[in-house]
Image (cartoon, rainbow, N blue to C red; front, side, top):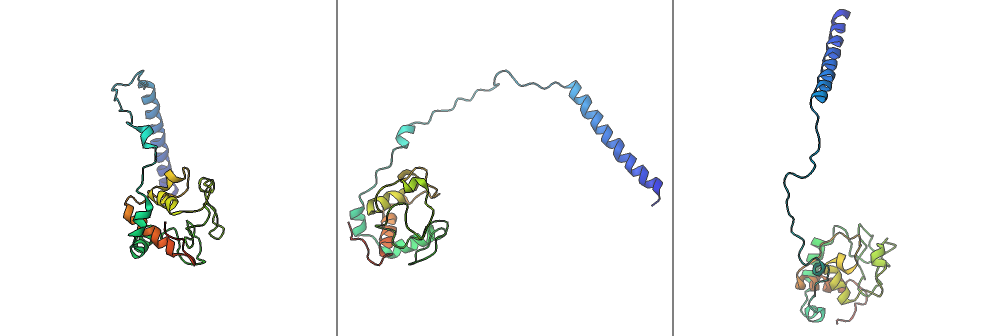
Length: 179
């Protein structure tokens, strides 16, 4: 390819760029876009009904009768399915995205678990993990400790929650007495 052909190619690119620029400038001069003063179509959005009631925690069934019929084996299967992606369950196990859950029942809220960095929301909950607290937590963590970092919707089914709690109860050298 000789230098004259190369120069013709560069010139063609420059002419095309100049043509696009001039066309855009002329279009901007001819068309004056403006925002409307008011919306053309008003869509009325219904207000959230019962928004104050939705913030109230849902009443849960008492845990004691549920624990009497709970199946730790079914709870293990549920926990492995729902929780194992973030938690470990072995004695001395490593923390994952969430803390190791061995010995969690009876342990203080927001402490322990081999130095796991709990959210301030969970550190602010006083006391130890009881059966009732674990039931509320597993039902909906964000209701039990608003502002928690745990992104889990919760377990809606009472029996499944009781089964998981029965499994967690067994993850201890000295399990808590049943309620």
